[in-house]
Amino acid sequence: MARVIDVMPEITGEEMAYVQHLIKDFDEEKARTFASIYRARRREPMLILVTALLGFVGLAGVHRFIINHIGMGILYIFTAGLCLIGTIVDLVNYQKLAFEYNQKIANEAIVMIR
Image (cartoon, rainbow, N blue to C red; front, side, top):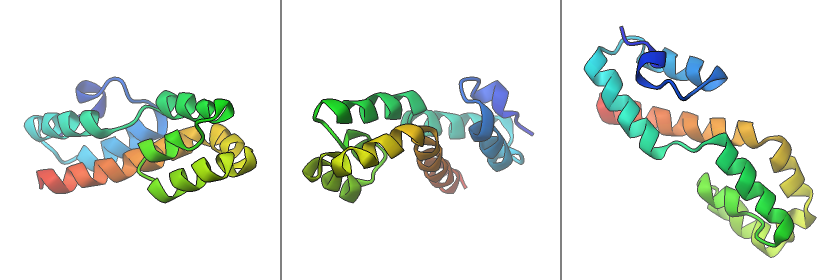
């Protein structure tokens, strides 16, 4: 049984609990394989925050492209972040946006390993 803190000490909180649930039955080798795939594709919440802040200087929607919400990214570009209201909401919810994206990536990594 692999422990997430041993293979991925950089993740915390809700993400750590989610990943631990996914890899609880993995041996050490599978857990390290998962960690390398997941690390390469996950997004840090601070990256989402910084790119969402770019919405105030004219590059609204960059954070949406980073988390693979292409349609919303295009909408944010053409509407100036939905008149900055969408950008402000995303600034408040940046951790949730990152966690949802990382959940999807973790699930894809699990499928690749099995």
